[in-house]
Amino acid sequence: MFPKANAQAKLPTTKAVGDAAEQTALNFLQQAGLRLLARNYRTPGRGGGEIDLILRDADGTCVFVEVRQRKTASHGGAAASVSSTKQRRIVFAARHYLMRLASQPPCRFDVVAVDAGEVTWVQAAFDAGQAM
Image 1: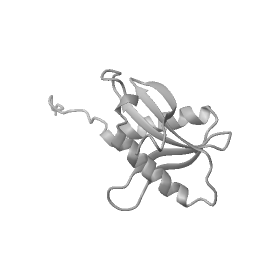
Image 2: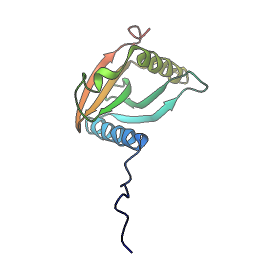
Image 3: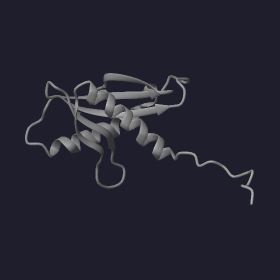
């Protein structure tokens, strides 16, 4: 007859929160003039890497984007959470992606941080040599 008092509302899953942050980042980057090439690109097999977004800038640069989301900006915020290990995995996946192309475009590695709903775009956040 009466609803249970201890019934909990469904909270979004970690994946749903991450997907929402990626969509926010994608919308932001597309408004800045970048064009989506791939989303959630993964290398085959175990121990590989994944790239959240791959876009092309207006000048032809291939932009590999890591999206990070945090509820608060404490502890350095979302952008500071891209470790050297994560950078190596992104570079590994980027090399795998680029092997499929007939010619190598200029590339860069960006981070889009979504901290408490605020979007920060860090262009050229790291480079392939730095991540090795």
